[in-house]
Image (cartoon, rainbow, N blue to C red; front, side, top):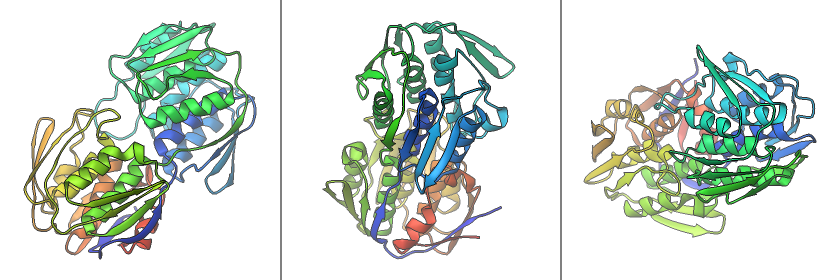
Length: 416
């Protein structure tokens, strides 16, 4: 079993290019099942989750080719299977996103309950509610889910919570449905906008993505096209915190600064200097980090996917910081690992109170989920000694070459 070792590192310096967004690439790969011609995706990150999604597409009858680094060609003209295998679903929750495309494209889909990071219950009831509203019949039996419909018909759908996955799945199902579908209280994340942009390139008619109301007019079929994945705002935020926590001076390239406004604002509150320059952002750390508070919220609020990394930073801020987690109820699993390294953190329900300490100390720790793994890498950069991180497959699910990128900035990090 591979591990990542992180030694106490000097202040990070240099430039790092951010990869395409995992949370954009996965639904767009799923949506490729809707096209009847060649689709070429650019700036696709090299991640384990992407590999699994490509396996899912292949198992359903799509042709998937890696043309070059970050470039994937998909042809789904001959989809011949509607069952997603359990061993693929159990590896990654995003596999569930093929349900919408399969249901609307061939009228039926069968899968099992999804896997992924154990960060809390992420119910699929909103996905199924949307499919039912479009006219599908749903059966749930011993962890298996099937849905079928002679034809889907547009409808008005209100989401009880602005779920990203449900918004994406319903949107994909609606593009070939008869008539108009309106999704109210839709998720507004940039990844939703990217998916809509991709589908519109294939011939879909989607308006309002990025707002709380999305309107989809059904079309008869979708074709092909070329699309470049947006930059990963969470990877960008992770490297911004890496610069901040080491007192570094790092230019993070290939970002859309409007997507990372909450991260920029909170880093400034800690005393860091953040300079925006077009599609890059420069973060200059400080030795006198100040405490701050964060509350995770759906976009455009502070992203839950940056909570663990920010908590690592807060562990070294002077004073007391508070984190309130409103999105997932089980997203403090990294706390015990950080405490092993000397952090002073107390949990009270969905709140964490962090008292800043003078230093962290290395310890053997494990990545309990994807973003927790990133948080531990950040902690290792400044902890005394050598930090050994286990369960790093979680990290590989969401970060494209994290140790190579950090090494180029001066970090002492390697695998064994």
